Structure formats: structure tokens, C-alpha cells
Picture: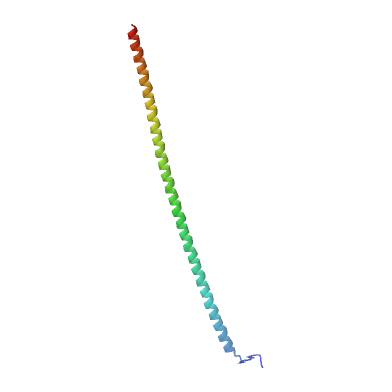
Length: 115
């Protein structure tokens, strides 16, 4: 047997070149398929990340709306309480004024009765 033969018969340089070309084409197809799969995976990851980002943004906007509503109601409640307290103080002042006037009137009436 010479250096260019095997059990099946003589190898030719053309046959080896064809086999290498076929192997290279198959390898290139496999690599292209791997790249395509990798790109699909990366696209899916990007879509999930974008969806998550939209969800986070949506949740943040919702949180901000809720906080704004809480502030609005807290301010409204504070105004109501302040108005209620002011009205209570005014009523007490009016009551004291009336009690004082009644006391003066009663004292004058008693004084007139003594005279």
C-alpha cells in the first residue's frame, strides 16, 4: 500500500478536497444555525427585558398615581380638619361672648332690682 491508499482503495486528492469541502459546508451550516438560534434567544431575552421594563414603568406610574391620590386626600382631610377646628373655635368664642353678655345683662338686671 502506498501513502495515498486505504482499505477501500486509493484516496485521491480530489476526493479528499471534496470531503473537506463538504465538511466545511456542513460546519458552516451548523455554525449558521447556531448563530440563528443564538440571535433568536437574544431577541427573546430582549423582548422579555423590554416587557419587564414596561411593567416596571407601569408599576412606577401606578405607584405615583396612588401617591398623588393619597396626597390629594391627605390635603383635603387637613383642610377639612382645619376648617372644622376653626369653626369649633369660632363657636366657642361666640359662646363665651354670649355667656359674657348674658352675665353682664344678668348683673345689670340684679343691680336694677336692688336699686
